[in-house]
Length: 438
Image (cartoon, rainbow, N blue to C red):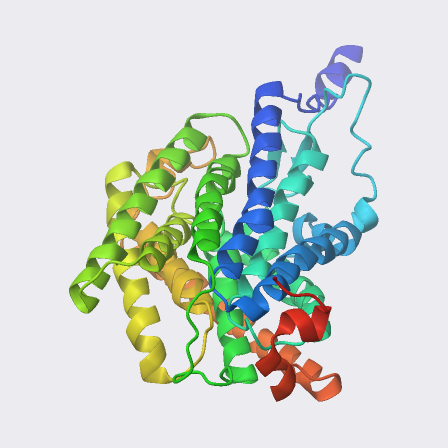
């Protein structure tokens, strides 16, 4: 009589995932690489492209955003993004990173499950603290990218408030929609390996809103606004290029073949985009420029980001060339046709490059790269996936564009967004921070 009862007993729960030391080592390295992309990479890239009187202010923006978002992410950002609250926003179960160390045992050999309890839960073979830090670096660089659009003219106090609010009401929801195991955008099939929608389109359209709401720089169109130090910009772009391997290959969340392919296509697409921009500029203007080739490289890094875990090397060349040529045309022609002042081409490079990459991911996705036990065919490129990608792009543009505009208007009506004409003329280094480059 006891035999049937024993047969009906529920199976014991599976053991918790074990930490893989190789995966963990790679993710620790990737986290450091992505943080390097903001400080010092993006800081130097942007600082080298502004005028001498605003170099320190531009460096200050990147450094301060890193600090602000670190605390915001720790207190509530991570919880809103990667807990399972609902398909639209996370809950507060990781508020102040509550419970994030509960899976650490003697020897630290226990991993965690992202989205535990959901049908799309993902078993992680790294500590949750490492995953949280890796994602923090993404949350840091995304708002920092926006600063390129309003360089030379936003009040420092307004910038601080905008970045904190933006990271919570714009970045966290979109990241949850796309990357959370239960996010509604990911659920309808949109794919974004490392941040085409979440990072670049998101920051790019927000940057365009900043440029439109703030208006043009004083003297734009007739004063000399040449970059102060292109050497800084080249160093910054080079740091971005190297750091981007952590950004893309690290998004495999493991030391595996997919990470290796993501690294390979990142290198190839970046080179192709730099050459594409260089040749387009050479044809259009008669000379290839240093600023052009590094801008093209960044455009390639942007465009390959959503595709890096889904495409093969041949496709990455097409993505890179397309991004280089299209972003050159946007930054050199379309911007002037439409008359907006996107100081350092945040929208022209990140917004447009992100759109190119997100859409072409839908065209060139190679199924076996994303195959799993649950989805053995993986994501296959074609018209159907292209339509899904276009839907995700539109959702990001609308949400980020609308909410960014509202936040900017609220701040402008309360404390004001823009420095005075006198401050802008003298330069932000001295008027906002009391310092200058001697």
